Length: 110
Length: 115
Image 1 (spheres, rainbow over the protein chains, first blue to last red):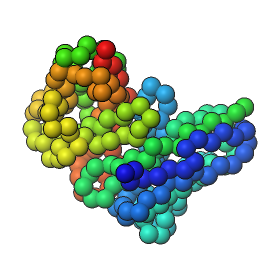
Image 2 (cartoon, one colour):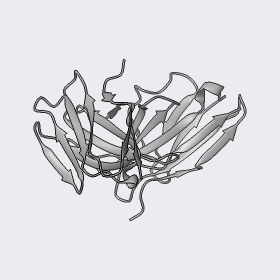
Image 3 (cartoon, each protein chain N blue to C red):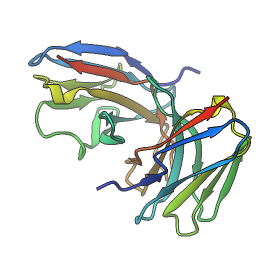
Image 4 (cartoon, rainbow over the protein chains, first blue to last red):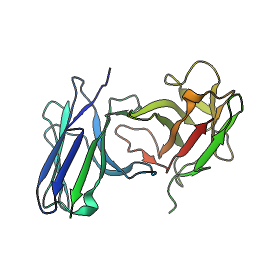
């Protein structure tokens, strides 16, 4: 059973377009983290959200944590080829174990 | 400030051999976590350690796998008598302390291939 479901699994868009990917769960999390992973590398932390309803912005990336702390979304504005990668969400519920989704593979075409 | 370091980056073993994976946490971090990423799967938690203590090993296979984080030196994930199903990317993460939502920072991983 996958604790965190990420959708869509794969998304291909043209440079300059906007996109949103989702991370959903039936479980409540104390915090949720978004990472980006390049082929052959480890996950690189983008953001941590801890408060229900919280919105964080990182340049063209906007992260939202659901009010009930069960889901999250990542919105990218004016996507660039450098945004290509596997976006992973991971939830933590007080036991220091991160539960990961399978990821959203994003491809931005120049 | 160096990040989490793992070595080797790639490891090839034949069935039945032992694999030793090393992880040096970020400076100032005393908590280490190991995760495994199988092909087409998400990262799965294996074990959480502090210096000289295993805190949570609920994600470790019952046999052949062990982990340690000695007082001095890196954390070691050891896989004895490897089988083809152990082929995966193994990631180590570290955090400074545990008081709530502590972010975990990941290393580049060790890709283990069992022939």
